[in-house]
Length: 157
Image (cartoon, rainbow, N blue to C red; front, side, top):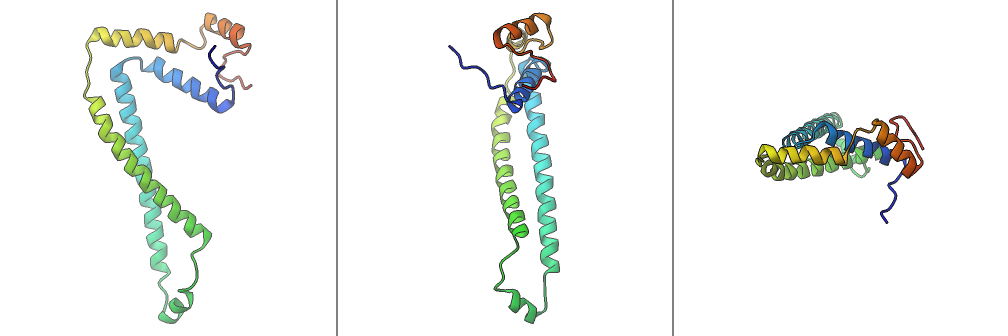
């Protein structure tokens, strides 16, 4: 007997988004394009935030240049928790960007694959089985019977 899907709000939101992406992009080509666009947008946003953090860090480092006596006095001081937090965020974003570049290299291979129209049609058929319309009356009745909870977009358990 399969395990009951999690009913927490985060999981429910994930299931709805998962099914929506299948319904709205039911072919191999559409999934390739969707994933490529998502990867590129993630890289663009993460890269820009990283650049901004690095710029603000270098600007604050330039402002912190002090006369030799003050620099010697502060040399033994540790950086503030905010600075350490920002340095950790920069390191984490650098790691994320490195992983995204690796994923991009793998995705390029996936993006090159083309399939005949009859295979694309099979993708459409399977997509309809995996993620039928959530507001379909039969689906709503079936969900109420099987899960005893309505499958409505704004429903919160």
